[in-house]
Length: 116
Image (cartoon, rainbow, N blue to C red; front, side, top):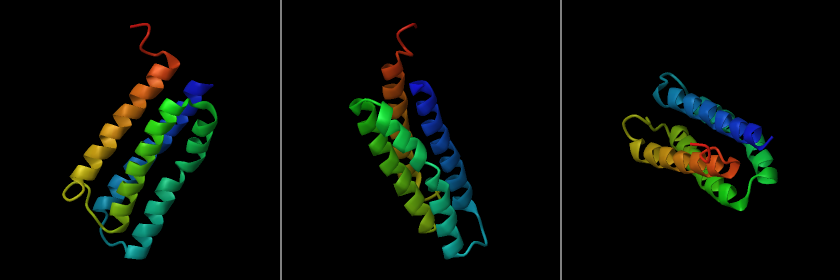
């Protein structure tokens, strides 16, 4: 069950990241439309995060909260009209580094690396 919760959490974030990257290079959007789409893209991360808070140990929750903050920072850059490929690289690098830490914490929690 925990693996399923972790998978849903990571999948929601992957979907959000894809949507935000597309929005960052979209042309012809009003600021209002871009903001609405960015908030909507991130909204899919809430339910999996609440599931995570019920089942994950504190070590994973701490990493996930940091990662969620990075995801919201990306969302906010998109709302401001930032192109992630040109101006938001530092934020994206921080986001990806935080994602790697979450992956590592989750894998350790479920013992995924113990059989290697």
